[in-house]
Image (cartoon, rainbow over all chains, first blue to last red; front, side, top):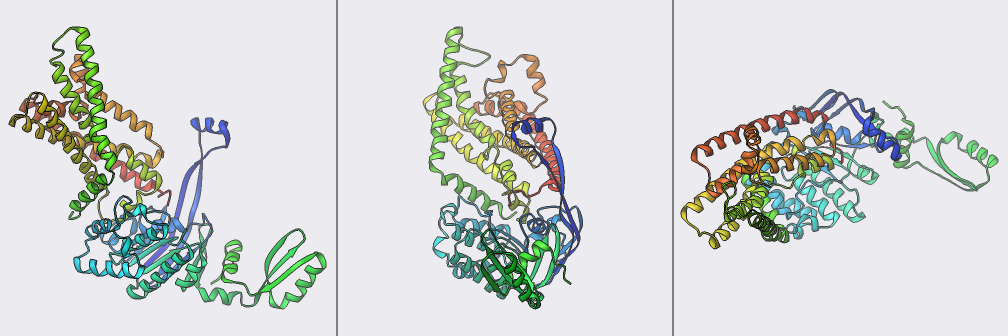
Length: 308
Length: 265
């Protein structure tokens, strides 16, 4: 299981004024800034659970994943995953963990996938029998058998992502971190990856943390979501709880001559609010509907609704 | 460490995946450098009207420049700047995820390239000798001995490269530093001009640095111009510098891993 306590991470970086003068100045003196990427994070995840980690760009999602995968050292706090501290990079931990990054390839570009897999087989010390079984299972499920002998760099984006998934799952990891696994993929490839992950989760029951900007990924795969905003968790609970939280609200989208805006309003105040809008604006269109999960999460990310 | 033969095989497959690069290096680069050096030294020998300069005839000087470009290629192993580029782009992350030592992985990769270029050196050396002076058992023995010394030197250079390239965790771009170090190693090692042409005092000072041992010594061993005593001392010195650079690069990594932010992922 994953246990995170008071995890903090602060990054220091340099900033430069724009323009040539700024560049020249930075040759001599640079301004240092410190950013708190994570502020006292606490998290518990049990075996077999799949958690969706959601947040705006720069909210701290990837930093958290990097720490849990052992790539980055935290500034403070404790993490225990399957009894290991990730950043100590114990080989026993690394053999049970996988990181899948939608935007970065981990397989060797100049080699056919099968060559990469053979090397990974030795690196992860996978025995012949499970290797063959997993290779077959993954290639069949992902429908990528034909492309395994082609140089990875010559494959399409969707095919490469499938190869990445295979490479990351060959050793049957007990902990999986997926960072934007469907980014840049077309709709059918996204669907295939989601379907595959659902089956894989059912079959092998790993702990999975998924970060994605595609709500479809989260809705299809995760029962529990964690929303992170400016380095802190603002929501941690079941997806259904989010829908219940705002079950009493309606989403109103108003288009006037000059602008359009969307907001949530309690059902009891709906008529008075819309009347007020009609009175004070030249309304061209008014649309009232139940808030979608996307709307709710966006609202939480913006306004940081505190829940239990 | 069961994985290393597979890594070696993968790296060889990678080298062979680029056929044009293979032949350009094998024939083009080496041939051009040899021809330029031959033309240059022929002019120098003719203008000074000397048959022997610092112990070199025109023939032995040409042989020196047959060995230097291919030996240098062995020395630099994997492409210069590869590791720092991986750190810059974030692909370095893979070595932190895989359950293996990053240093072992990189050293094996590096030495695979060196060994492969060693084959190129061997082939061109034999071809050259076939037309000049002939091939004897002693020539082959010198060649194998020379390749061994170049491999040792590559191990030293691999550790030095890692030490420098790991600095990109802090500095992002260290290209100019790498170019400077490479120039220093090659110049002070005797890749551009044999060390015998350096002033005496400079040669004495250089003996306290790794430079003459990573270029000049392996070239002279390949040519069969060193004594057993010099070879034994050379081996010891190379090993010592490999240990020094190895310890320093591990120290840099120990500090750097707290700084590494996995930028780019």
